[in-house]
Length: 197
Image (cartoon, rainbow, N blue to C red; front, top):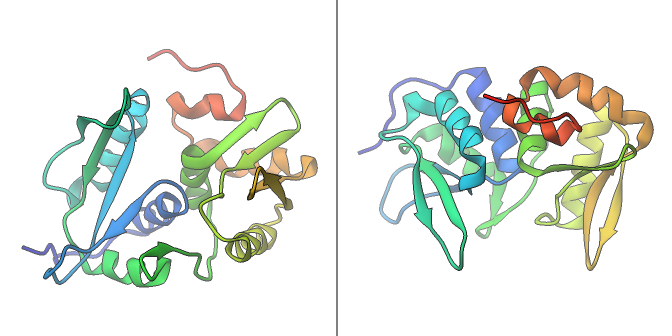
């Protein structure tokens, strides 16, 4: 049964876009009218998944569960109900079942969730978004979206793939934009010590 009641809040929409830029995945079951979102991270990021669940709780039927994957990896994940908004987002973010980048206007929540999913910091001057899943052309579009909010980056070749590297001059601005939306267990990505809970 589809959950067609109620529209998503702006915060939820931004949150979902950030998740799709990162590790989130939308799909539509055969014969179903609408799509749903899967949130799936390592069990080591349990706090992060619980936070994501709290944002989308009204769109789900049950909370996150752990699941053993291949090898030693244990995933922690949940699924939303089907919803027309997810179907619209699937049409924007997927071509031939492959994730792609539509025209985007980034906001602090989109950027924060994207960074918590795919951001990394190496030393003081190297901050990346691990965008290797996207084509070089799509990554150029992402760089343009970042430029529109005053953040400069380049494409950094990582083996045979590219990923986004922020210019040193933009790092403090990036952190200023996202800091208030970064949850305590993910502050380490900003270079802070983890906060004990």
